Amino acid sequence: METDRQSFKPDLERIEIELLLEGIFRHYGFDFRAYAYASIRRRLWKRIEEEGLSNVSALQERVLHEPEMMEKLLLDLSINVTAMFRDPSFYVTFREHVVPLLRTYPFIRIWHAGCSTGEEVYSMAILLQEEGLYDRCRIYATDINEAVLQRAKDGIFPVSSMQENTSNYIAAGGTGTFSEYYTARYDYALFRPSLREHVVFAQHNLVTDASFNHFNVIFCRNVLIYFNNTLQDRVQRLFLQSMEMFGILGLGKKETVRYSAVSDSYEEIDAEERLYRRVG
Ligand SMILES: C[S@@+](CC[C@H](N)C(=O)[O-])C[C@H]1O[C@@H](n2cnc3c(N)ncnc32)[C@H](O)[C@@H]1O
Image 1: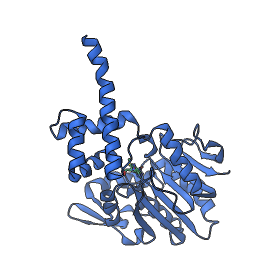
Image 2 (image 1 turned 90 degrees about the vertical axis):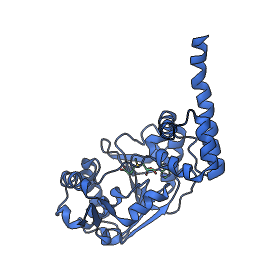
Image 3 (image 1 turned 180 degrees about the vertical axis):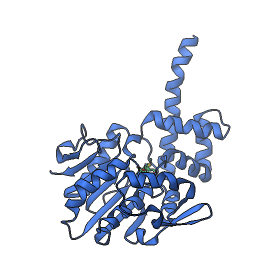
Image 4 (image 1 turned 45 degrees about the horizontal axis):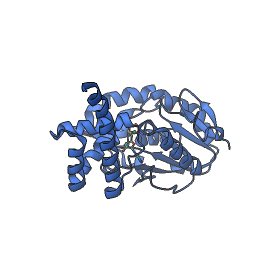
């Protein structure tokens, strides 16, 4: 009897989670139904425990009736961790193998999909300025979450993260002095507004929104890992539709186009750094 109950509970919990995600989609339009289950489950329980609730159905009651609870949950579910020059070797490879290609373009359109609070966008803007390419770039930086986008637009980051950012910048092959890109004020570092001069920050949902332009470079780093395989394929098709021929795709360390529905359309520039070029 005991064994039966134990094996029954995960199934029941799965039903509750599916109902909650369906409710969120139908009521608020955020579609988390095809996100990786284990990760979603962990995030939901974090919120359940912080609110002192006892199960997923109790959370559903709150989320559907209180938009403020949905906002909190959106922050939990969207996992916004990021850093400047995250995985510095990615930037070194980008400088060595992609920058020479970009030099041959008169105009460069770049999309940062899932940019979070913008550290990745400012890092790339610094790299492009140092390589003398920034003035010919138009950069679109998007995320599902308005709150993180606002922080990206402000370009203000905790001063406490500047030590790590500086060592990442050096390891990423930075050619200047990192502290020249920001002004420190109390606990905050305010980044040079010129770094976002060619950047448009906008809300865009990779699950439900369509392609909105054609790009020479698309970055989508550390986002696909939160999606199940079907959704990863769907988003990969969206990128392919949005990518110019010979355009560059940059993914996160644990993500790949290999084994995906679009793998034949790309060649590897550097498999380890997850940099690909559209060839078909
Ligand atoms: C872990 S962060 C990655 C940030 C940055 N790209 C990096 O690698 O450091 C993942 C971001 O993906 C965003 N995200 C999650 N689901 C999304 C969706 N459906 N559409 C657009 N962005 C999404 C989250 O809001 C979050 O800011």
